[in-house]
Structures are given as structure tokens and as C-alpha cells.
Length: 357
Image (tube, rainbow, N blue to C red; front, top):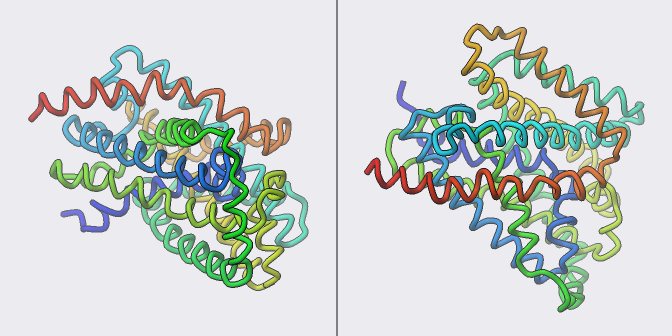
């Protein structure tokens, strides 16, 4: 069956965007750590740098996956690293646990804020939902991640409109708080490195590409789609800068200050759902890697693997806390992704793409 325009050009970007949002910036904490802490103006420059890097690397990844028929990350990484793929496998698993840890911690806090129930209840609901989606397989993961992306975009746009309507002057005034003694590049470089390092998790989307134009275009579009909600959230959080930097979940702080209860409920439901579909997407990518060497992997096994990863991750989240996970955990492996993934794919990978013609 021929893939549609949406599946070729937009689906990969929406799936990658879901991975990025659920991995951290849906809470707003990630945007604070990598961009807002640098200041309003330098934060925007860092975001532009991150967008450029992510778009270029995604384009190369998609084309390399297309020409080699690499639709899961083990074969993909072996395609340009050879035996060095094991190093990537280790860092990928650590990053997977960190991302799911962030989502587990945040989903418990959001569920508690939403209905007043213990955080553990929200975490359990998330685990059951993720296990079910992973159990259903690739087509279900694609459908849920693309549909929820539209819902999430709608929520972010509504929030942006309401914040600008109420705090426009604060946003403009806060641009003047830029410090000259800050980094105008490193936040974007670090952010791009660890986010793009997880790109092989969405290679199941590369099955839809038939030509080089489709693969490269999808990558360039994907980087932009992934960063648009981040830009919206950055501008929204400027309305409460710099005090918002200390908030564990800055998005909740913004919504509380908007003061519109129906929207607060709507947005938190959307964000909670985002953690579910992102968890399903990233764990599905790991399952595809296992399936490449264990073809007899059943749907039940997929669900069990997913729930096991969630258990380990949520234990870490409860032990270390959300802010520490994002500020320390992510930072520690950022340079690992640069060394064993970003640089090799932009050198060895590009060389093999051109050699293939």
C-alpha cells in the first residue's frame, strides 16, 4: 500500500516532536535548563541553533535509513559504526530510562494536580496505557502519536494566545533582562545533541520513504515541527521570567497564573496523554531493536518489556527528582551522543549516502 503525503513528509516530524515534548519540554523544565537560563535573547539564538542541527541530522538519518533499509536502531547504527554500535546501545538505554523517568515523575505530579489523587495512581495509569499501546504494535503507535500531536499543538497555541493577551507587556519588557555573560551557543548544541541522539528510536517511520527527496525533506521539516512548540513555550515562560526558573513544572505555574480553570484541566489532560504516547513511542523503538535479533518476540513480550522499563525509570524519578534528572542526567550523556552518533552520522553516514548516489 502506497504511503500518503502525511506519512512521508509530516508523520516523522510529529512522532519526533512527541518524543521531544514527552522527554522533557512538555513540562517546561527542559526549556528552562537549556534556553531560558541563558537569557531571553541568547535563549532564542540557542533555539535557532538547535533547530538547524536537529533538522540536518534528521535529514541525514532518514536518507541513510532509506538506502540501507534500516528501520530499527541496531542495524542503523551498525551501518556506520560497525561493532561500535554497542556503545550507542548502552547510551540509548540510559537515555531511554532518563526520559521515561522524567515522564513518570511529571505524570504523577500532573495527575495529582488534576484530580487530587496520589501521584502513584497517575503513574500506574500511565504504565498500563503505555503497556497497552506497545502491545498493539507499530501502526497503533504511529496513529496515536500523530493524532495526539495535533491535539498538543492546539493546546500550546491556545495557551500562547491567552498568555500573550494577558502578559504581552511583561514578555516584551523581560527581553531587556538579557545578561551579556552567558552562552549564546552551548545550550542549543547540548539540547540538539541529546534530543537528536534518540532519532533512531523513530526509524520505523522511515518505511514510508521511497526517494531521497522524501527522506531529506521529512528530516528538515521534522526539526522545525519538533521545535515550534518549544518556541511557543519559551515565549510563554518569558511572561514570568526570571522567577519561573525555579519551578519544577513551569507549565503548571503558567497555567495557574492564567487563572482559567477549564483550560488548566484541558491542558493537563493533554500533557498527561503526551507522556503516555511518548513513552509508548520510545519503548516501541527499543522493542523494534530487540525484534531485529529476536524475531519471535510476541506482543505480550513487548508489553512486559515496556512495563519493566517503566518500573525502573519511575524508581529513579522518585529517588532523584525531576529537576535533577533533567539538569544532571541529560547533561551527562549529551557529549556521548555527539561522539558516537552525531559526528559519525554527519561524516561516515554522509559519505556513504553520496557513495550510494
